[in-house]
Image (cartoon, rainbow, N blue to C red):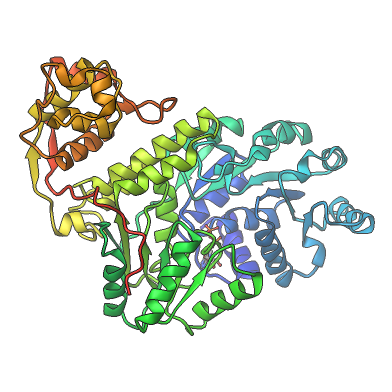
Length: 529
Ligand code: ADP
């Protein structure tokens, strides 16, 4: 072991009390200490903070840590101060400080006491701060939650966009450390580009959570009864149930209570006192289940959550991964059950209408992945990991048999001829119908729109009547996933042929579709009593 390694280990022990590094931490830290640009991608709980805290504590100068979460910054500052001799070792610089406090922070930095300076990105736009930081020794700049810089991330923050310029103003050669728990290949590329560090050494931990079991069930009218049954089968275990709306949260929490389940609601519409109370009840095990909107979960560190149920499918795979990731933190069992109806996707699409077109395009692309995930017949784990740019082999990989599609494979049928019929119908009707109307054209049911275009008088009207509308709807969704068709955004969903779709008409190839396609049943908003 070299001197440097011994030093890192003793620093780990001294400041954090740990004897071993976790995962890639040691390699990352060596790279940061060497003054290189570094990009760290680790799932939540992977131990990212230590990757910049430890180098900051042992390096000369002050490390600037940019983070969007004020509460989190405060926690980190308190934790670092607790193990250091001087309170000034870590500071937060933000607009809430008065003149005297700002002076104290500046003095501590100038005197070489402060090792970690936490700032929100908007504070860095203040000329006064930038001018000051230019004059002191900065060891490196850590950008936490770096996905906030990308419009393709789940939490885009425009203030992050200017970081590169600001860092350059503070110092031309300051090493940068970007960290995130969300990295699709697209977001990764964006981060490296936007932070101006194409040469950064990238460290990516596996996103595989082998102890989580993934399952998607079709959402039917009996979804609430199904959830109650599931929760009762898991009596006494802790779980989170996510719903899209506050109303649904309240409704489902009540239904569970009526059915003898210890459940509480949690959403941003509840007053702060109630929210804290319900959160504490969950942590202290006074309640088994929290029914919540996505407002619940950030920073909740309950290791023995045994199930996460999605009553409504989330708007992206990232959100799904983050939310299901709250199950089984202790390495024990964690059942992730999502209910999916295509209707819910359409609901999410409606929410996006009216937003800027670029944002809508991204939103639609992310939703399309959710459809693909929900309707896929390949391993859910393989799908998720592939989404995060990771190849997974179910035969050899850990947790390879931990999802519904692997345990209970769906039957596949050849749909090549039907895909051709479908795409030809789109072409022959001059790409003017949305999915619903196109299905009607295929099965030969006219309506006002179809007859206004005189499509019902044309030869291909009803070419697909041998199959039922649900079959065609399912096929359209799977063909959208395969990108032979795309939805036009301006017209809210008119189907158009992609180049791949046009090629398919001329050169059809095998197209296997999952036979089980009951995903367009009415989603039910009523309460089961
Ligand atoms: P992330 O930011 O990646 O979500 P954190 O930095 O919050 O993760 O770390 C997650 C947990 O792991 C924390 O409780 C932290 O104290 C712990 N941890 C980090 N590094 C180590 C280590 N080397 N040994 C043991 N525990 C660690």
